[in-house]
Length: 303
Length: 83
Ligand code: SF4
Ligand code: SF4
Ligand code: SF4
Ligand code: SF4
Image 1 (cartoon, chains in turn orange, blue):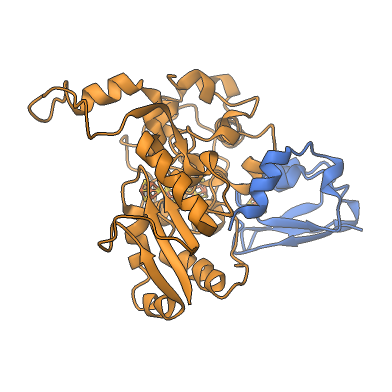
Image 2 (cartoon, rainbow over the protein chains, first blue to last red):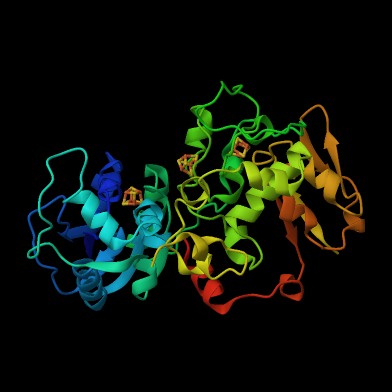
C-alpha cells in the first residue's frame, strides 16, 4: 500500500475536491493507497511521517503555508505540485496585482460586502510580501497543472504513479482538443468577452475574442470553447511557451491575433485590456514565466 | 531525413503552417480542412510551422532541436517533471 497525503495551501479547495471527481475510480485508487492525511476530507490535523506520495495544491500566501509545505516535503518521498496554483501560482497569485496591505484591508477593515472590522493581530498567519506557487518554494517531483486537473487526467496520472510507473499523457495545447475552425478573417477590433454573440463553430480568435487556447496546456477537452466561452488559460502555459525563452503568453497571443486578423501588432496591443487578469491571470506568480525577458509580469506585480 | 507527423485530430485547419513554411512543405486538404505534408524532403527543420501551429499538431522526428534553441536549465528541469 502507498501512503497518500493531500495538502492544501492557499487554495480554493477545488483541487482536493477534484480527486473526488474520480467517482468509482476512487475505489481503484483506495485499493492501492492509504489516505493518511487530507485536511479537507478527513479529520487529521497534523502531517504524519512516512508519506509516499503527497499531492500539494495551492500557493504559498502566508507563513503557515510556508511551514506546512516545508514539513510535508520533509516527510514525503514524492511531492506532486497539483493544480495550476501549485505549479504556476494560478488565480491565487492574482493577489500580486495588489499589495498585501490592500488585500488584508479588503478582507477585514475595508470590505464593502460585510461589516468592516479591525484587522486581526493574532491567530491569522502573517501574509508574505508576494504569493508564491508551491513549486517555487520546495523541491517538486512532478507538476500536474490544471484548475483543477480533470478527472480523466487524474486517473491517467495517479493510477500509474501508485503502481510505481511514469504516466504517459498527452501534452498538447487546448486548441488540439477544440472543435472550432481557426479561419483567417480580417478584422480590426478586439472584443471584450461580454460583447456580442460569438458564432459557435469558428475559433474565438478569428472573431476577435481573446482566447488563450493556443498558449495553454490542454487535457481539459477544451471544455470552455465547447461551452461558448473563450479559454482563460487555466491549464497554465503550453509546453512550447515554457520551453522557448522568447515565447510568452502575451507576445504569442498578440502575434496570433495579428496573424489571423492582419492587424498590426501595435493595434492589437493597444486594444488588449486588463492583461494582468485576461492574459497573465493564471501564471502571474510563476518565476519561470516572470524570468522570461519578454514577460510583462515584473511591470504588473506590486511587491 | 526529417519525418513529419500530423495529428489530424489536433489540427484546427488554420492554414498557418501552409502560409509560414518557407519551403512549401504543407498544403491544405480542402476537403478535410486539415493540413497535409506534401514536400517532406524539402523540410529544413526550421520549425517555423511548429512555432505558429496553435494546436501543436505536428511532430518532427529525427531532428536536433538543441541546434536551434537556447535552453534554460531551470526550465528544462521543470519540463521533464510535468505530467
Ligand atoms: S488550481 Fe484551481 S482548483 Fe486548484 S486550488 Fe487553484 S484555483 Fe482552486
Ligand atoms: S484559440 Fe480558442 S477557439 Fe480557437 S482553436 Fe484554440 S481553443 Fe479553439
Ligand atoms: S478551455 Fe481553458 S479555461 Fe477552460 S478548462 Fe480548458 S484550459 Fe481551463
Ligand atoms: S498550423 Fe497547425 S492547426 Fe493550423 S493547419 Fe497547420 S497543422 Fe493544422
